[in-house]
Structure formats: structure tokens, C-alpha cells
Image (cartoon, rainbow, N blue to C red):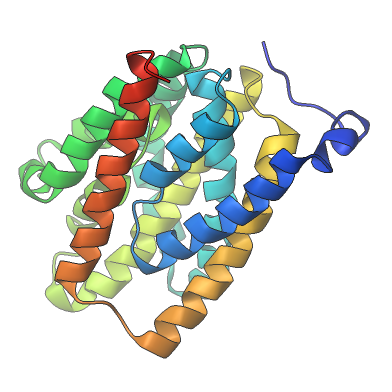
Length: 260
């Protein structure tokens, strides 16, 4: 079992070439996440390439830490518009599901990322249609299942969270407000998942620290690019995102079938 380590443990490793790759990769993927979204589909094969021997849970757990720091930045800039009480109620329903989801994958072999990515790709593509089935009657079950998936993998989770929050704020004029709430709920679920992975010994400081530093820098650069260039057209964003989905599926498939 890989355990979380103290500062003296990881200092020699932080100077290794892997740390440089983590910073560079985290930065580039952070830019992609800010401009396009769906960065999990690049982060997973990237970490698989660097650390082929790590478990499913260790890879996902350390990526959750990266996502936590990125979410912190988003929360800081939008904290005045967050409905804390309402969002804690939603997250509370998903809390148990998140713990169970993260616990299930805690020690799975890395090869099982392939079926997980297949599922995540399908969820990402079908989520807009699936979200229409989330109603006030199915709210509790939907929140639990959303939390379970957030803990298990989490790629494409934003669409389902937006659907949950929109039940409370259905007006089209509140879409921007809804997205702010969904990002905060995602932060709460990420905190739960990170805590679960820490409990299972999946967090490795020499992985998440440089990766998170790079992602933070990438988020800053991505924000500047969005401000300078404006939003890409929907068709271009879909093309880039679909390329990332295909890349993640191929990379994990090669690992699953022992081709690499």
C-alpha cells in the first residue's frame, strides 16, 4: 500500500525528472481544463505513462487533490454568489455515495481504468440526455448516484451536478448562477473523495504536489487565454474534447490488453 508521506520522505523525489513532467503536464492539462474541460481524460493516460505501476485508486486519488486546488481557485473568485446552505444540503445527500465510490476503487489494479474510462466517455456523451431524468421525485437517489460516481471516477460529473442544482434554480436567466453552485458542490465532493483516498493511503505527495502546482499555473494561463481569445466555437470545443476522449480510451485500452 502506498501511504501519504511527510516532507523529508518526498524531498529527494521532488527533484526527480518525474516531478518536472508533472509540473509541465499539469500546466498544459490545466490550460485544457480551463478552456475546454474534460481534463480527466488527459490526466489519466498522462499519469499512467509516468507511473505504470500505480493502482487505479492512487492515480484517481492524486488527481482529486489536483482538482481540489483548482476548485479552490474557482470558489475564491465566486464566493459571494454561493448558496452555502443549499449546496451543503445537496452535497450531504451525495456524501455517502462519494465515500463508497472512492473506497471501491481504492486498491483496484490500474488496468481497470479502461472500463471506467469507457463508462465515463459514455456518461460524458449521454449526460445532457440523462440529466432530463433527474426530477424532484428522483432527487435523493440521483444525488447519491452522482456522489458515488464522483468518488469512483468523476469525469464529466459537472453536467449531472448542474442538472441537480437546476431543480432548485430552473430559470434560464440563472444558468451562470447554477454553474457557480455546481462547481462548489463538486468541491465538497472532491474534499470527501480526497479524505477517503487519504484514509486508504492513496495520496502520494511527490505526485500531487507538482501536479497541482502545474495545474494551478495552467488555470491562470487558461484564464488569460479565454480573456484574450474569447470562447472557442461549440464545434471546435467538441472536436478537441472528443479527441481527448479517444486518446484516453486508446491509452487505457493498450494498458488493459497488455499491449504496452
